[in-house]
Length: 146
Image (tube, rainbow, N blue to C red; front, side, top):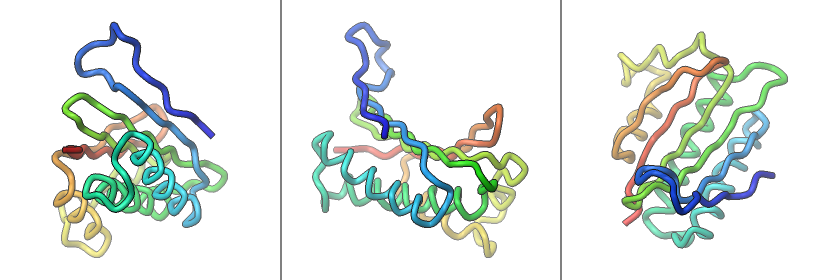
């Protein structure tokens, strides 16, 4: 299991102050573990369970991880959860999967049968988006932690 890292004192102003990265199996169990891991990490970073920040982060991770294991799954490949604590304070949640060919084709139709979860992400996140990777894609979302 990965452990959180702290940014060096000379890091740029927008650099993460703490980070957690974990690869998880692309299964419903892996998605549940991602949510539990996020909740525990937010608590360790000073945002206890059952606070608005922790609950919102759990909902975002749950939705993005569920999308990764449902729509981004490639047999034998994991998905990755990355939590970044940014100045502000802001939490950036990133979920990466190996399926580039399904690059959220429903973004243009958020009310379609397969895009409803992204409405939740849009409502909860300050901002969110999709970034291509060498293999696959990363869907990210940011929330304020005040």
